[in-house]
Image 1 (spheres, rainbow, N blue to C red):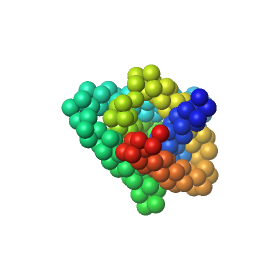
Image 2: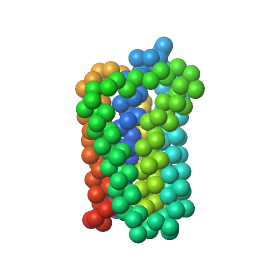
Image 3: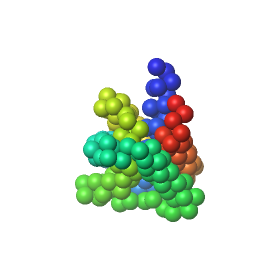
Image 4: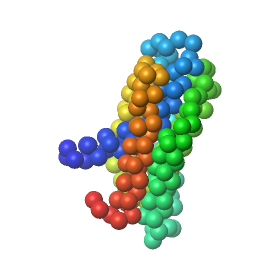
Length: 187
């Protein structure tokens, strides 16, 4: 029970690393950093992140029967790509600042950081996660994303300069490890 909780927590934290990095760097684009502004931005990011993961799971679940023989390879390759991309972006030194003024910009930023959640959702369906498993993971992703965006927005560049890239690298490594688990069925 505790091991499953920790695995789900680590999974959720690794998936929201992009949201943390973007919110941290993007906090400088806001005119004012107030709780009301930060909380609605965090809710949008969390909703989009968890929602796209669920949509990905549903999409993958529709097709898993057709590609069942290669589902674990596809799941692994998707997570390898997402995790590798996170590590590459973190090591590339690219700025992840997004203008977060206005609902349109917030939604665009949330979707941009959550495309990987869609791919992860597909890979989870390939690993045959049940609806109850995916709902628990989606709730964990929602909560962790919300908290990471809040921490990133209030922490601003101080946190981002110190931990943003490290968080992305660790998140990428964890997603690749989950992909390896899907491929080789360790757990």
